[in-house]
Length: 107
Image (cartoon, rainbow, N blue to C red; front, side, top):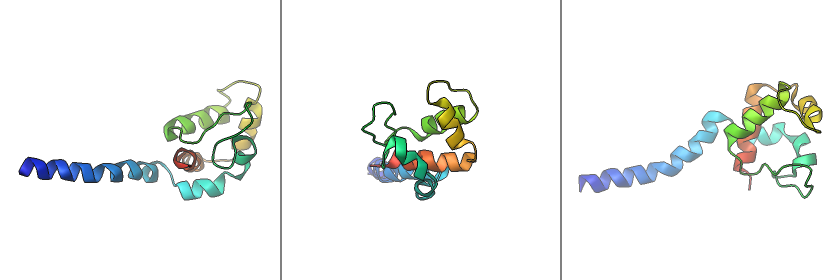
């Protein structure tokens, strides 16, 4: 009986752990507020019809954060790198984390 109780508690806590990651990494509500210029290329929820730009909806927030940091620091190259660098230059790490969580949780 005790094993079943422990297993049940673990199952109950699993969704909470997954949703708490976003709050610990960044704030999706703030990310939505901080990302109005992103929609022009990546679409309103991170899905775009333009094949020149990647879909970012549902991506891992750490990946999105690291990609934005690489653009911000000039470590990522490509035809649109200078545009991304200009868009991200005034954002803090907390801003980037909020935006990353927003797009990772977008549906």
